[in-house]
Image 1 (cartoon, one colour):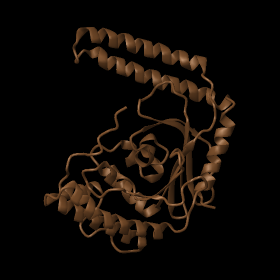
Image 2: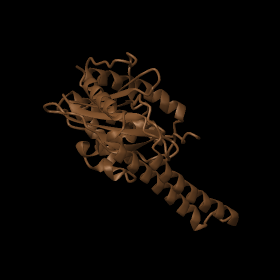
Image 3: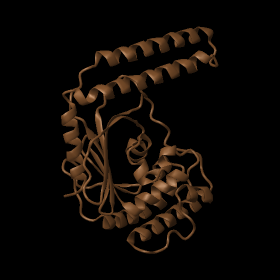
Image 4: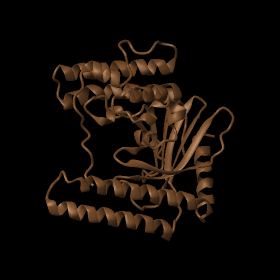
Length: 308
């Protein structure tokens, strides 16, 4: 599948700052987290001013590089020593761009620890900084309503995991997994699938998790590492929906009319089939052999997120 264009329409300076949730002067200096947010606001403003003055993308990248390095040093100091088994020692700093034309400028502020295969990932951010980022995303005109629920309201939703971890792959959530929260923390975990092709009859293959505690937000994902055999009843539901959608598409194709309503109907039928397949799977999952292991793995991932 073709990767989406990483560029987006150029925003005016004021719009760029509002989209980032930043006002002139930045947040009040009440501590290291606020100092970081103020530095990020100034860096965004500097790059936005250069873009408004007509600087090229290359010139904007050159301007942004030392600013990002400074922000990275501040972030490392904010988070402090932390490591996760199975990930590379040097994390990736996010956001990876300050240019408002690039989608990377929308990335959350923090450090991304990844395994060599990139399927295991832990994203870590100071809670005040992450909360500020989420609030900024929620203000955007096209923001998913789930992102407007606040940190604890959004943390277990599909749009939340897509915004933090999805890159160019959407996250489809199949079901929550029961994980135990410790004193003073909020945790959640789910079973799902990162995909570029939309809802189909693929079984879930990833566990995602979030922990809020000790002044940090940790959001991560890892492979399920379990073989899930096809469920005949669920497969039947999907195959019938897919066959119906295909018949509608074939009929619409013969008209050579892009506005034929059967194109839209086929899309809706296939989407409903995916929803029904997932509901069927969720109902059966707790009694399937893989499920206890999935819950245990989710608990282990949340424990690792505690950094202890």
